Length: 190
Image (cartoon, rainbow, N blue to C red; front, side):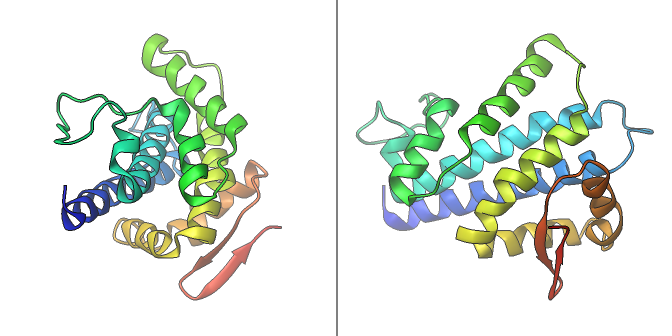
């Protein structure tokens, strides 16, 4: 593959991941009134979003790390990509960025219990927001600020007041630590 093709693919996948993440934030923040199980689906989607984000970043640097059984001609439909559990290790190797493996494995287990058994034994809003603000957002803030800005744009076209009101209220309610730069102002509870 040519470098331009790789960059185009990874850019599109990051865009998809960040739009999914925006949906997760919205679904985790608002009540489930008229959207039953939206909190549970936020957990499913946050795992999907993070997996896509990691794979896109890895693919941009080393396409065959995402498709380890290929040496050329990647077929996105028929070729298997790397197992989700291996992504933090490869991400660390390529970017020298740690992913909190404990929280990553926990959110994957919760996602698996939802998608395979429909288990509803936890506060899904809390679990999704905790992963987003303890793991995903800090990586964006520290290492991928352009992607964080893109996430803010994804959220912005949906609801101008989401961070200032409802999300901050939910993060405070769940006692989730956050610090984020929004619309040229720094908002933090830590």
